[in-house]
Image (cartoon, rainbow, N blue to C red; front, side, top):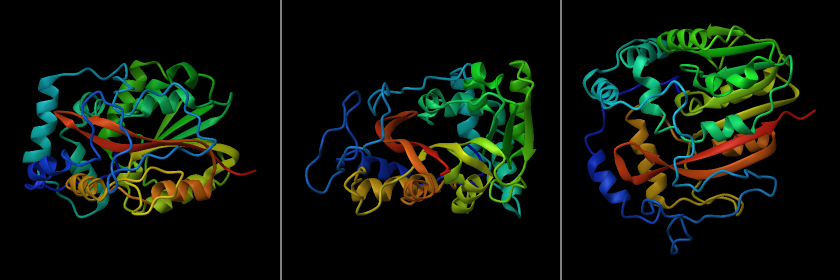
Length: 313
């Protein structure tokens, strides 16, 4: 996850946590979310073609860490200290990104592996065309590629695109250690990346759309560079619209207020329109909405979605 800016944490978060933990949008640990009373979160069935067989219930950490991510309290403390004590500086989006990530890049995977859910099931769901090209937009430290290591060798090229140089440096080291030799690294903005039309077979966004201010331009770019019949896969945080369609989950007002406010402290901007845009631009292959655990906050579950779509032929 990258493409982000960051500001000092919001001092009102602790009170907000207490408030939201008592709403219908949060279940007790280990419980499957049930249909709450009127005014709470409404869980509807996903789209008819949204078959995500085998994905565990919302409140189970389905991913587990990637092979490179090892839980370490010391590592977590370094990340938390950086978030709290190091204000972001810079005159451009890229400079602010680098200011934010430079001090935590080496500890990035360990901490985020317990926050960024859905990446494992997303990668497992994908088909990797022999001789194809995969563009991972907002690739960060390259964890998606490491998760798909057994499939990467059949591809002609894997392209990691990110605007944070410190994260790409980590990605280069990790992919070299994993002996993945068909990857290239592009320090670029995912809304303006210079790539020919219809030249990519697979595009992925893993917790990067919420960190792209012009996220709609990133989706447009993905659609442009994908070949007809090419696939796009996305997982990210989100909140529902105030009046969600009958096929999508309806979040309570507390959920729709709390999580955008919480994540905005780190310049991660949850949107109710990501899913609508993806459904409009691509033919839906799989889609589901889930809740995931938050490190060190055992009563909270953050909403996220998984989407796989195909560019129309």
